Image (cartoon, rainbow, N blue to C red):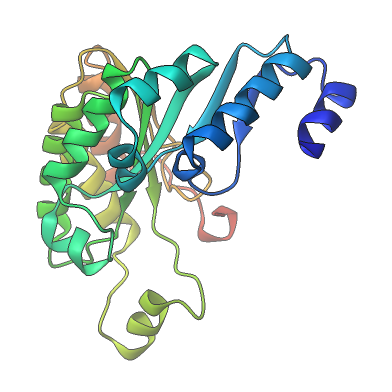
Length: 240
């Protein structure tokens, strides 16, 4: 409530609010409704509220509860898919299967939210790289989100995956392999009308493509990068 009061005084030009920093949809419904109502009262100029929404939180909310949130201003939900490969989902302890992700992503869309789905290049390692890419394309096509955001894996010290990397149990794929993974993923992603972003600071090749219209041109751009005709972002410029 203090944050909302601060925004009411100092953020009068901002039209969008994001409920940070974790999965805000997991908040009990009564409390979440109270927060949204306070935003309506204190920030009447706000046109859209956004939040993270994982599969567990979406399952816990009934369709009616999601529609209540929509009526109070929630316009977009960000869901971390990471991968459509069940083997990799289990390995990274995501807590959901690909089928469950499809079901929950569809549920968010049916509630009227715009849906942005995040995927993670490199998360499957070299052995399942192409399987991860193909399965992720399949799951994205089934969900048909409004936005897809592809990030490239960057390892953080002291995390289990970093420890696997140091011990040799996990290999971080090379930039060219990540590009090949991205190409397969985009080739297998069929959206009715959506934006596929791979322009996060972690990515080697910034991409922003409207699918299906710009799919072929985007695949051509990646092919040129794979052939060395388009420069990639140097490692020192990448960031989380």
